[in-house]
Length: 406
Image (cartoon, rainbow, N blue to C red; front, top):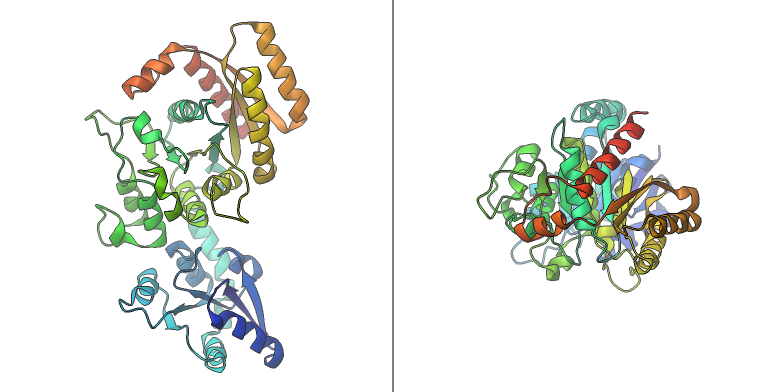
């Protein structure tokens, strides 16, 4: 009987040796190369092998694999003096940890021993039903807010979360801008805990998450990762996971970890609003820059794109939109024409140009006038409580709800 084996991309020798050996000597072992952890469940694997530093390795992945009966084998470097790699695998709950220096024949024998019991094959549907109790899939939503630098995406994201908080459980607003993380400062929140803390929770590295108990539940862990006021003010009507304490920390964040984080958040909050960075170019050939925002955009169910209401702003927005469209697939795109001109004809001209350029790909276009209350609120690190800006965003939010319910 065929054994389907998944192997993670690895710079270590074991991966290439195993693939070659199975191809030449083991007809019943079919090896599949995994680029992401979720591929393991799409393919229907029996055994998955990965390194202790595999980028998509996380506690949710380990738990899901265990629930559906996929056996996991974690390989670590035995030369590490502190044994961090093996300890990391143990913390995540990987039951089989072996040296990455095993000879290929020993690794093949281990794979055969790890083949799961066929009686576990029917667990996937039960697991799906159990997970769906956390938050019905139809009620989950990830909304990405983004646009070119200077268009006002931060203010729109805050107002959107504020409007969505009315009449239900608060949404969570997540700052994934790796270029200029600003939500904490904008709202008068502390810089710690922040995005990396929440990622540590998802990856199971609770010991590195500041202020977290050693074995909390997933929801309690996320609650402890929420940003807190640095000004002694009462709470916001929505939850916030702050961005990086400094933009120099962007290299510490793995994009697929943030993707897993957003998936987990959407299972615990009815709406997740992500504030994207202004750059979405694909630079993966050279460096992983902007990959966090790109993954967050790709995970979104809906996109709110912010365009400065000027001819120059429109040109910058079109450049941004080209990169965004390559990521978001069929997700609806609503546009906020921010700080629009008081001239109705000038504004209508911009709207017509947007429609001419993007055609039917755009959904609603909300014309949002300039409002001095927004600037005052930014200086005071407070919310905009009234005025044309907030009314326009609230109308957009209501329209989004109506479309979702239709």
